[in-house]
Image (cartoon, rainbow, N blue to C red; front, top):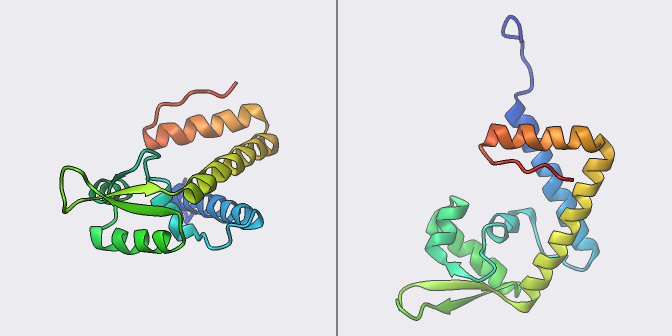
Length: 148
């Protein structure tokens, strides 16, 4: 980068790639009958522990206010993907769990993501795919494990 030339920031490229990923996932889910799931629902579902979790912990993990997360959970609950269960130890707290329909959605999403990763590797080649993953992990502070 010389002379402060305008370039597309790497973070923007990451964001655009992430949006393409989410749109492809939503399309894949829609093709399998999950037509009511939106990319907005993903921010909740990707942070929800499969064993369930407190609303406050989910809000913290998703970096969303408790008020906003409450609305998002209500949407997913109305669609039948999650259920709220009172906490056994704290009557004020709510525990969020996947319903069987929500579990089916997650299983399908994992399968679709796996296929997407295979497509990325096919598109880039194994070496460049692993370089991309390693570089992205390094930038984001994750520990990278090379795919074999």
